[in-house]
Length: 179
Length: 162
Image (cartoon, rainbow over all chains, first blue to last red; front, top):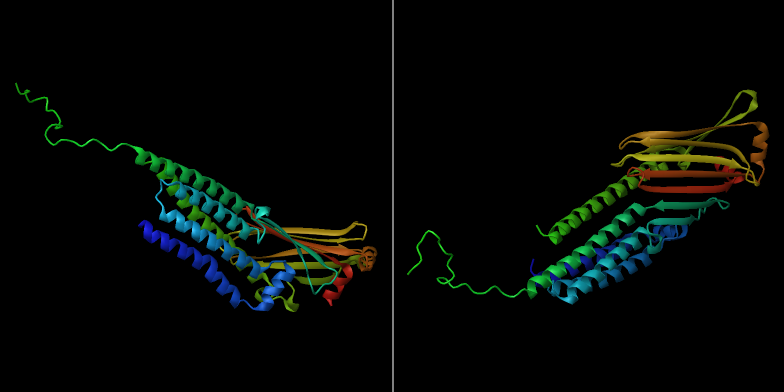
C-alpha cells in the first residue's frame, strides 16, 4: 500500500475500532449493568472506554507520522517505537481492567449485596497473555530497528556506476583479442 | 531472505495466533459461565449450586452441595471447588474439595458431601461460625485461571438455605 494511502487508512481504522465503536457499544449497555459492574467488581466501564479513546487518538497520530515518513527517517523509527510502547500499554491496561501495572493478575474485592456479612475476592490470572505481549513488543522493537538500519544502509550506498553498453561488455575468452 | 523480513513475518504470525488464543479463551470462559449460571443451568431458587440436607446413622447431618458445570466452550476446562466451615477462631469444622477436568462440550457435576456430627453442628449454628467457599477455573491447559472466594457468616448461609 502506498505511504499516502496508509497514512489515512490506518489512523482511521484505529480511531474507529478503539474510540468510536467502544463509545457506541458502552452507550447501548443499560446504566444499571454499568453501575452493578462498578459496585460488584469495581470496574468503571465508562471511564475505561474514555481512557481507551484517548489512547486511540495518540496511536492514530503516531500511525499517521509512521506512515507519512520513509522507513529510513528518524521520525519513522521514533513514532514506530512510541506506537509499539503505546500498544503494549493499552493491552496491559485492558488485561488489567484499568490497572496496567498488575501485568495481567487482577485481584478485586467483591461486594456481594444480598449477603451483607459476606466478603468475596476475585483473582484473574492473565499473566500468560501479558508475557506473550511483552515478547511480541520486544520482537517488534528489534524488527523496527533492523528495518531502519537496512533502509539507511541501502540509502547511503553509492549508486552503481553506469555501464557502457560496448566498453563494459563481458569479455568472451574464446574470441581472439583484436590486434 | 533478509532477517528483518523473516522477523516481520514471524511477528505477523504471532499476532494472529495471539488474537486466536484470546478469542478461544474469551469465548470458552463466557460460554461456560453463562451455561453454568442459574438461568442457563436450570437450578431452582436462582442459586448456582444445589444444596441437599440429609441425616446419617447416629444422628449426624449430611450436607451435599452440588455444582453443575456445563462447558459450552471450545477448550477443556479444569474446575476446583472447596467449601469449609470454620469457627471464629479459625478451627476447621468441616472441609471438602472436589475438582474435575471437563472437555469441551461436556457437562459434569462437582459434588461435595459433608458429614457433620450434632456437636459440630451446634458450633456451626453459633453466630460466630463462618463458611468459606472457593471456586477455581482454569483453561488453556492451566495458563489462564480465575478464582473467586466468598466468606460469610454461617447464619447468612442458613438464611439462604430457607
